Image (cartoon, rainbow over all chains, first blue to last red; front, side, top):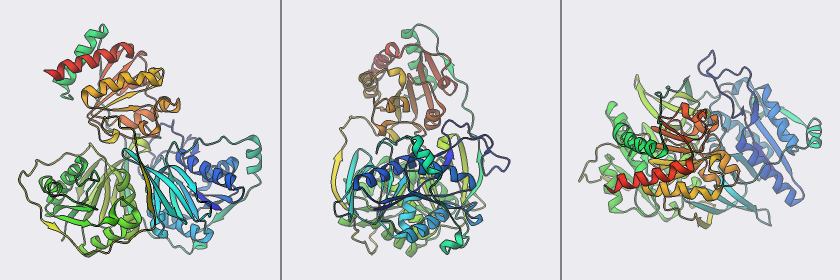
Length: 259
Length: 329
């Protein structure tokens, strides 16, 4: 079975992100870039499906600038068979819907029965991409999945989505879109052999025109990024634990009115 | 009608709207008033109740659009989206708001793609500038804020629970209920099984007013019982840092931070949590932050309103006793 895994390159989680000279974006100087962690769960699951079936193909795809090739290279090192890099001026200031349309177009060309996303990219935290791609394609989708099993006939998937207080397990006909929640699996580390092999695998450049797409103008516009308002200075409550706790509870009740 | 702000109802699957819907209606009503419009509820369910409809009116819904059909439970995006899109197109609404919940975060994203408009997910503030809506949403898990606006209506947004105020209840208000004729597709995915999580008897993490959270300093899974005791006394949810989750002490769904949940409770109490940047990102919008840690240099003290430098195994049980004493008064 062919499985397509869209990924996004994002700043490492330990990055202290700063607003850039253009306040609509961040200062990218000195940032370590990684594959968004949830996307690694999606890729790992795709690789496991392929290994279990003993055949198939895992294709990583991203929309992003030239540096995003490194993210694709990481996916190839983990075990993806090939990669598609959607890079075009038309997508430079794209909002999630524009990216969703680009991904949907490439999915139509590739025609995989299953597309596995991470639940959200940890930069803009929009968490909309998998659902929007499913909608553009007219496919069913399940978000934040914690488990999945492809049926023996390869025509459907049984997937458990995390909702408040429960796991809802659906039988979903293929093709469909799933998004991975943390806990779905434990992503592997690339082996040295994998890293070496990745250099020989194909990363194909795809332009908007290759997908028959024209620039379609963002629907959601970033006005500006802002720093968080500073929190008021706090107070360390001194004293023996018993006294400190009494004073803490009094402060929470009387000063902060938090309880 | 012009300037209608629609609010998608989040219910308990038994015909009762959840409090977060009151928050969404409250914010929608405040914004709609400035534009001479009104907040309206849209309820997709397999069974509504009279009490539920009344509750929506008391929360400020000037009208309730009710789509009641067995195919609407459980939530499926492929079923809800076309129905809701048809209704929205028929009535030309100004905005469609939802809550950040499992189903609505997916629904609003699908809906935005279907109608071809922008979506501001996980919004924490709104303002109107020259008659246009501007939303504030945390990005990079709350390390920065992003202000966004829409190129055209309807303005679609999901609102983070526990951030927006309810309006004063319109006690005794009776709902104006509309039952529009809308095609409801049957859908292709089918529910095979619903596995309930073992009930902790404690509130859901994202919706809780108070969150008690433990980190590496808890030293092991068994010690979370100490925090659960405390949580029971004050009606709190129990969360965990990534260190505690990755050690296997708590399930993933309880993780707070950049690769977990982002929360904004009224009161956050962190025990044995150093305050790595990824964790702070997930909880720094809490109204009041209390930190208990042995290490006076722990970064969490930099964002805490109140801190106790000490052994959590001593402090937490004392705190439980003290809260118990206070709340029994």
